[in-house]
Structure formats: structure tokens, C-alpha cells
Image 1 (tube, helix red, strand yellow):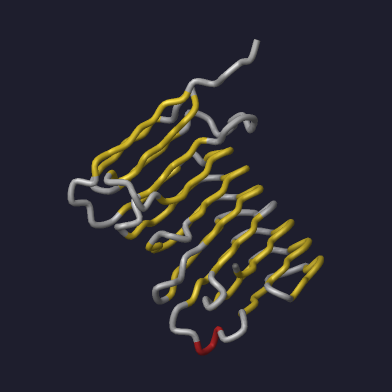
Image 2: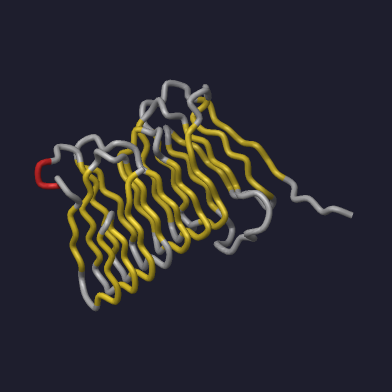
Length: 204
């Protein structure tokens, strides 16, 4: 007998919304967030049982998992956002997560500690800030080739790959600027407020 996991599909109307906020206040594991250019809704989520509590209010979409620990076998929860409005992303701890924001108009990203998080960024519009409020166990950040970035790590690090630069076993704070950062009008600021085990920042 082949077992299966029940899923739900949830969505909310766009209804004149001009900006969006995706909030995962308790964090999440085994989740994918991306955009859907063909959607006419604010978001669409396909989630496994037990499903998170999802609330929407004036562009704010809140997915509140009852507990952080989630199984990591089978298909991940999937959240598709409408790319026609600018988005902020806020979250508690993230693990086994993929945030493909490359087709969104992104305002900012703020998460708790991360483990095995893949983050794809769009072109920056002015200065855009990505903040990890904790440790980064395994974080990969990709950005467009013509987009500059500054990386600031508050704690020590075990291995950090920043474009073609590789650093190992740094005992204290680290600041690194990508090539052309000083002249760039649009730039990302990546702030890690804890220590780093593995961080890879690259272009696509």
C-alpha cells in the first residue's frame, strides 16, 4: 500500500491590493515560495495536513504553523505570490526552504535563524535589505549578475563563499562588498546577525 499525504489549496482575491506581506511568524520547514505571473489572486498555497492557519488582511498573508518541526519527506508546502505587487517577506526560523523571489518586486526579507535555505533575489530597486536574525547553518543567496551586494556577518564563520572569494574559519565580524558596489545605485545588503556555518553568495 502506498501512503499519501492530504493537501489543501488555499488562496485570497487580489481585490485592489497594492502591496503584499508574507509572514511566517512561527517559521517553517520544507517549504517553497515563488511567484505565479498568471495568477489573478493575491497568493495561492498548496499545503500538507495538518495545514497552517492562514489569515489575510489588507495584503498581509500570514501562515502560522502550529509547531516549527515539519516532516521533510514528500512534496514541500508551496506558496505562489502575485508578482504584480511589491512584497515584504518576514519569517521565524527556516529549514529545508527555497525562496525563489527572482520574479517579484521585492521590498525586504527578514528571517530568523536558517538551515538549508536557498534564496533567489530579483534585481534590486534602490537599496534592499535581507536580514537573518540569528545563525546561518546553510544559506545560499543568488542574485542577478549586474546587481551589487554587501555582506555583513556579525559572528564568526566556518566557510563563506562570496562570488570568487572564499573564506574559512573567520573568528569575528566580516564585511564584504561585491565588485562595483561603491558605484552601484541598486544594491542588496545581506545582514547575518549571528554566526555562519556555510554561506554562499553568487550570481546567476
